[in-house]
Length: 120
Image (cartoon, rainbow, N blue to C red; front, top):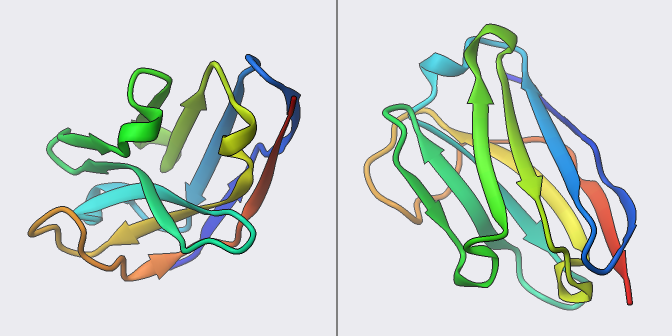
């Protein structure tokens, strides 16, 4: 399984970006897909996750600003990021779980990161 993330870039505070994660296989075969991020000097954290059945979970810091969605026909998962803040600056990684059992489980697959930089 390969996950290819793209869409990062440099944006000003308050701006928007949409990240995309294209999977090499059928995303319906995954129990869940999501996005995590890692800022310099910090641990990687979950940003958003969506199960096969459509349940979603967001980090408190992004609730109301970020939205995770998917396009089954394109085997792609998106992360729409609005009202971006400098503290959102990080490398963002998409990920997938073969079987979803609970929030917080370690993903089985990771894509390469895409850098998001929010200038103040």
